[in-house]
Length: 158
Image 1 (spheres, rainbow, N blue to C red):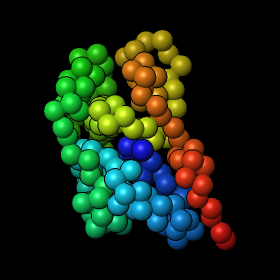
Image 2: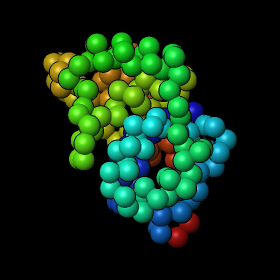
Image 3: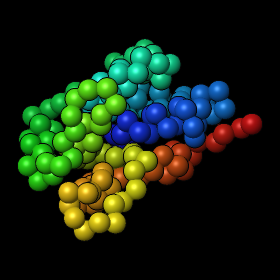
Image 4: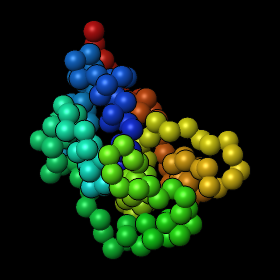
């Protein structure tokens, strides 16, 4: 199952799989969420809420299915991640990105796959690592959105 990073939602909505041209993508996201097979932690929702745009409104109307609340296990994993990767702890506020470690902790606690548009950092310096680096380090599966589309066998008709 799938835990989404904020960038998947934003970039898909506005650039790659816009609702007008790719409704299958958004119907698929919604159906997986209703089946408890896809979601994201509240921090992703909070990042989206900063914009108060159409994407946020779409998520807001599906909030009960999309948001994966924290558990004791995800909180324990988050503490370990924060201690191991303190440079990935973002600051709260408009335009900042602070949900990354929450996404990883949620996915790890559920045994789910992180879906992100981030690429690996080629740096060996852990201070410059991104979501894929941390996921690989912790044994958490991850993928780009196109892989989700392939795995779910969504077909876009134009």
